[in-house]
Length: 628
Image 1 (tube, rainbow, N blue to C red):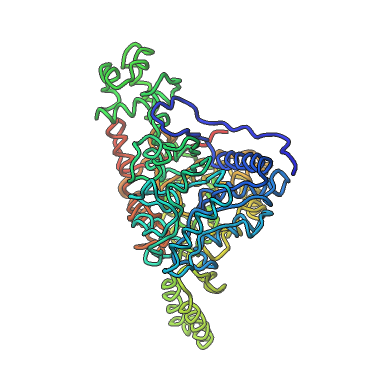
Image 2 (cartoon, rainbow, N blue to C red):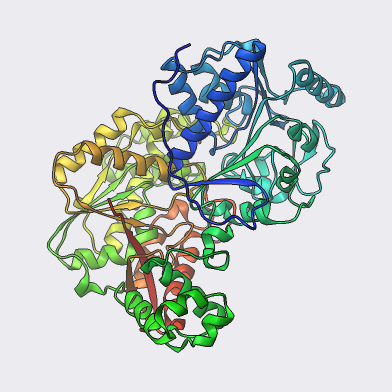
């Protein structure tokens, strides 16, 4: 095995960790997190195989470890690591679960990792979801014995669920628990509902390593990414040990590292309110954050904060720098006020390229500014990066087929041919289980449904169909929830669009908490294409909206919307009828429809600004301008 010629260096977010009960590493970029964890695994494999001829890894599934597995594959193909003497034990598996099911963790591991490295098949251990019920207890005991026979787990990789579960150790799991069958928590099943096309299809049970099994590992790495994990991460890292949050049991282990991206770390004290821990670097951004926090904590407008407010809320060091509250208040008020840009302050007569990961993200997240940019006579192109076809229910296809059959004669179509096609499609749909891959013609029909809805939504905000581009990136074309890794073909398509449009301004989804990582992959495609682009680099604006909104302190631009403009934005979202009422992939942590989330967030952004004493508007969208 070759040794890596050089070690990568990683920038971590450092500050006081007084309240953290676990060693925690925060990295600005998701890719850096994956690379750092993969590097540690390579080090463990090298050390253990040299010492005892084998290394034993405990592995996890889900979207979070995918980057780690991709990096390990790359390192193995480069000759930096050898898996031929590695033994693996996976944390869990749904029960019952066929090994070839698209939902099977066994299939996940082979498709995303094992099939691409030189591991010996006999060294792979994954709980068996097909064991008869009366033999499950014996199989769990045998799994424990196999771990012991291998010499114990040298390195255990973990994710964390919304309930704080590690593996499938749900709230109430005992610290002494071992591999066993468990009943899944309602929230866990709800989180998984998108993968199974409905919570009713999610298994109610799973086989999982126990808490004690996990704690027996010599070294543990807990990974978390995205804002939706921030609250439970804060509880796991800074909270008391409790059976209500199984991840807190990791505090009893002597060799645990928690690896987080910045959004997942958002609720840690050193990230959220570092000024309460120690002296901080009072940059303008830090001053803004702390003063807005103080205003919201005291319920006062920014310009009404007093020196006493600062002194009573651990901000005396900031007050001492300025001598009095007035100059600080004025600085922050002006900084916030200058972020507000009505139509007159937005770009005009520019070339604007909007990237929408799915066919509805554009109007969900930036339906207000889209109309304003068009009215400002910008040359607009809206690029829909994936077809979004997997997020269309079969009944929507049936409805459209019924229309075509009824309209066939009027359209001059062969009525008999339409009937035959409909019968073929209906028969295929009837035989399909939830989550099974659609036949090719159905995949195409679902793609066309999403495209027609996107065109209709653009029209609702005044933009013509000619502005739309449907990229249909190859990574998405699997017909199932799991996607391929981003490839050169994907990047080349995006790069060609850059060459065609030569944009001055680019809008990209910065909302990276989508259930299956499509937004993150699409953002990576844009970034890689931009790195290859030979033209003048455009200004990049990041939007959110489907799952979060940028906060007032994070945002660089606040775009006010009138009541009529917000109504038009919501009507544009309604044009995506296949996603209305019950979206197939709403995300497991918010029951509301997308338009309801958008309305609430845009109203709250404006209301929050109003409470701080800024000009009063009906609603607001927020954007971050990416800095090089």
